[in-house]
Image (cartoon, rainbow, N blue to C red; front, side, top):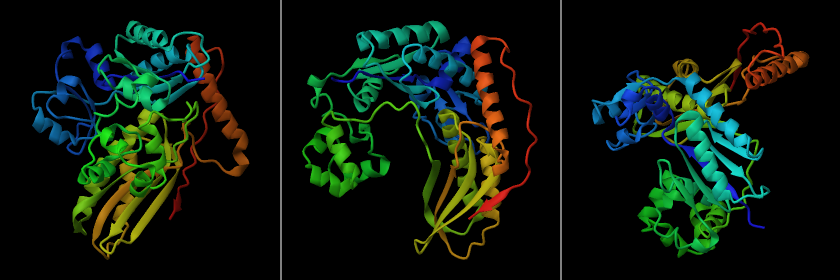
Length: 389
């Protein structure tokens, strides 16, 4: 039996919330992100995208492209509040929901005796009525095609991709639309004269394996409408990071710290969107002789604010003696958790349970609307920090 998969994605989520809460911003270029000189764009309205602004762009560049734009700082609590309303709608339909980020999810409605197109349209209607915002929805028989469909007619899009449309509907699309093909792979394919999915379809499975390795098999199947990935209600992300090969090898710590700040902003945003916290920060450097060196620091608490991540990265970089020139700088976080609690010893398992119970109680009370389930008492912070190379 063919599966029935729906992919939903809010339209320019942060910026749309700001335009909804501030009607005077509607129809104007709204840019949300870090407003400091080294801040980056979290998201921007469709009006701002006309000027070439996009997510993860340095804020100073966005200001140059659109000096008359409305620049706003991130209101995390407000976005989380709206996101919770949206996911309440999704979970009211099925428990088989895979959150991809704070504003994006897959639903498996195979076992629901109802046309998936009707379900998707009902989601769009309920989200609009509840939040005043638009959400794009795509319907198909697997995750790859459902996501393609939701992105087809943004904003406020709706698209259904059926089996009989494959592969013709995919042929004109750029290779970047294929899940598993990143920017570097796209550039490599373009250098080979491969620009569209239609071009990819001309290659054999063996050709794709030569280009992509094992992932080539998945790409070969995917562009032919085959994607067996299940909708996972629990997604495990092991680490989140960003790195850059420098235009010129350097020993300038100020330059390395500049990129560490940019990466911290981006990583913080990704943690926030995924609803995660991190406890380990790792700085990666590749020297001019291509040797890779990493230095990590594990904290006794979970963090996700850009400033907190950068402070750890700053400490690591400042304590590194640069004997060789650096050609690549990277920053990542790991030891991830959806729960923000202090590191405890193996003797404190009962305390860990108490923290989890407190988190559950908070969620129950939030849904009920009053504090019927009591919270556990607050724990004292353990100030001990640990280093891990």
